[in-house]
Length: 224
Image (cartoon, rainbow, N blue to C red; front, side, top):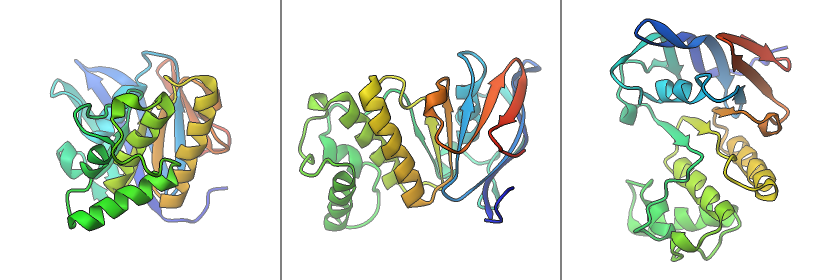
């Protein structure tokens, strides 16, 4: 049975179309704070397009239908930079010309230099990366890069976190460790999160969707 926690993020009959053809089926979901929904499906079923549409980065050639609501505000008419949504991709997209601290400070546009660096050090310590501030990102392992990328997204204090197959480029051992780190960060920050994946093992003990064959099915005791 659905908990009575207030709804933070909601899609209402949301759909993306190109030349009148649905890119993904009509979707209606609700998420509370700290809740993770995993959208499952094979390549080409519209998973990444769904995240882009929510974030506001779909091209002008696409048509949007329905509503995207975050903390009671309708987002569909807002540009990407005003939606307060962070996206973590399967490629970490770290800035190669900046060290680890520089990459993380990029997410902290406000506050004095001392406060910002304190936030960076605290975030790195939480990820088991204390003392990595001056490290060249090219020297980081895949797992370390993934953690820095996630920290950069979270330091911006988004109201919604989107994850586009964030574990797919990691080997099996790193993947499991990073999964647990991601889930713990979502819980500790109490932020709603939507993740797309093709790997059932990426689903924690939470709800997930199966997205394929132009149908969306809720599984594992979820809700529509």
